[in-house]
Amino acid sequence: MNILSHSAQPVKRHWYGTVHSGRLKSMTQTLPNTLIDRFGRRVDYVRLSVTDRCDFRCVYCMAEDMTFVPKPKVLTLEEMHELGRAFAELGVRKIRLTGGEPLIRANVMSLVRQLGQLPGLDELVLTTNGSQLQRLAGELREAGVKRINISLDSLHSRRFRHLTRHGNLDQVIAGIDEAVATGFKRLKINAVILKGRNEDEVLDLVNFARERSIDVAFIEEMPLGHIMEHDRALTLCTSDELRDVISARYPLTSLGEPDGSAGPARYYSMVDSRSRVGFISPHSNNFCHLCNRVRVTAEGRLLLCLGNEHSVDLRAVLRAPNYTPQLLKQRIVAAMDIKPEKHHFDNRGEPDIVRFMNMTGG
Ligand code: SAM
Ligand code: SF4
Image (cartoon, rainbow, N blue to C red):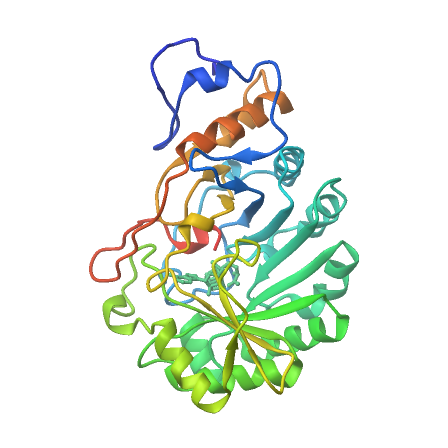
């Protein structure tokens, strides 16, 4: 594969990405130490999907019967470490490990330990369904993970089982409590609230977080992948609706507009608790102008936007016979040219994006 094409025309890259060959050529000498896209946004945050596989099948995230990426196409842990190092050298300050369920990948802790030692990286964080946390919380902290987001959509065992199709609520709560006892810098519950399924649990989830002095964030469901379980147009609960419910019980004080560092969530404090309540509102509030992140799928596809298909095949670079870390970094820098300005989510019909969230690395 000739990465440094000398064609004067834009070069069609893998999947949907187009990278101008001029920018690649001009980078043969020096590489920048920060990633800036063509809208002037600095990209210093990478979400790395460690696996597309999962021990759950949450109804909004996956179909019941999923086809996963064949194992040889999934990046090895060594390739993921190589990617992490390249991003850190390009000024990325934060890596979030996600999936699928990152903690079910065999030997994942070896990757976590390696990434935790990368010079220049300020934060290694994790998003998990909590099923393996009781076993791994201590090791994660020792390896340098500072913050963990744990998904939890219901506090009723049978309903939890229906929403996740396979999940065991007691196991997840034991994992959360182990993480609380381990003493991470911050823990946050992530909940997707669906009308008619768990909308009556919003306050219970806030109370669950308050009892443990951890944060809770409510995420609006996004139209990623075809699902049969429910009609997303009917189940969407907007952040405004949820905020009204919570503030009727616990007055909420805004902690300010998202500034990019906290991601797209708007956070609120409650007067009598250390817990913060967040709302991630891809539908009702679009913070694309603050976007500081890119994603890498388990098969090494660099996704420039959650809600668009623009991407670059980094696995091809990593596995090319002429591979060098320099070439990998050149390809990442050049990819900034195709980061889209914004997404346009619409839950009213077909999914906007046919890949599922477990592919995307949520
Ligand atoms: N398995 C881990 C977990 O569940 O936390 C990490 C991966 S999961 C894809 C990351 C987050 O994406 C979870 O908080 C989940 O609730 C959220 N998610 C999945 N599908 C979604 C969708 N269609 N809309 C909004 N959030 C979604
Ligand atoms: Fe698995 Fe997380 Fe998707 Fe649920 S949301 S199916 S736990 S990847």
